[in-house]
Length: 301
Image (cartoon, rainbow, N blue to C red):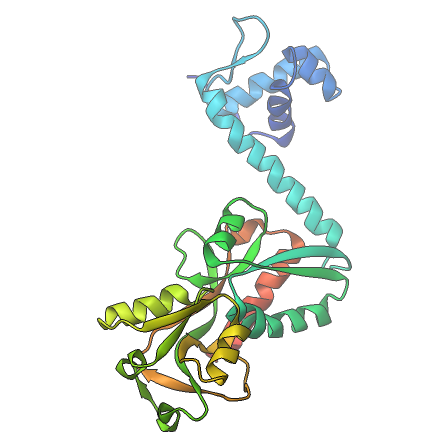
């Protein structure tokens, strides 16, 4: 164990030297890349090891070999400099965010059509130079895109325990009926009444929730059509080909020949904005995150 008396904390210069060592042929060569003399390089590396209280480099072998501890420290040093790059990017972008692009994930129509537009409109007014691209995919694929960092932010169904999340809205399932259907006169449609008609089942984002609702109540709808597109379902219902259950926020306010009615019992789902780590967002993503957070506060007040 090295003596840490009066060693102080590691400096960025020392950490930069350690990071450079990995891609260099020798200690002196690593220092030269940073414009350091051999004696200054040796002193900086020794000071870093003293500050951390352990050896990071094996000086007995040929070339450069990190000790076990050095290998464990390396990813964290890389994280330090990744954070520095983010700091620089944030500073260069400035508070105005005059330019940039943000790719935003969305799990389906409820989020794309209803939940996100107010946020997008407000964001564009404040940051007109930032281009936003919304990528709509099923919830599991949108979540995977977040994990694999293809996108920074996404509207997803929550909870999502492994993500930072801001709740944006709560959606519920409703009955979708032909306007002349006898159940259209009900204020609230009993779920059991929907199993007697041909049933048009969505294959989009709310399919799992619809199936869960019927299974939980030990009911089995008489599925005659499975459709991916919302407009297909609405057209079939309007034509009297069956009834359906869909997420309320995915539906247009009105559709000719169709009515929506609450159902009992029903199920709800929460919709939120998710990211891997709110502290490590790019400037544009961070600005959008804060806009969502402010909206959440307004909704609660």
